[in-house]
Length: 181
Image (cartoon, helix red, strand yellow):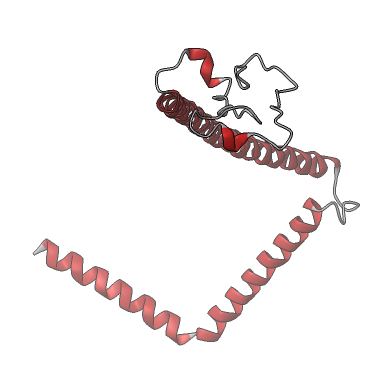
């Protein structure tokens, strides 16, 4: 029974409020308008004060209060700025570490490839040398010697002579065995 009475009182109170607001809608609107207009004017005046305008009408206490508000706002702004800068620095340090790791990995890959290429070249040189000594990769194989004039083969001796029956000897003697005497 008590619950029913409580609900009745709540509904009847809500109904009375609704009827009262409907009876004078113009009065409520004008009060709301005046209240909101005063609030907007106060906000505009405070904004001008924060921007450093129209400070002549403020008392010493109001100026000190304004200064304290601005100091607090500056501290909050600087704190937020520092936080963002630290986060940015941390992010950039992480990127730097990642890039350095990639750089190290790429340097290792380059060294491995250079080593592989060097081994391939050594194996190719070894195949070209056909078992010659290790210094042979520095000096190329001498070309076959060519005797100008003299007997090239026993059976073709007569055909290789010139009209004056002279044999030509090499002018330079080569230590590499290029020209055989």
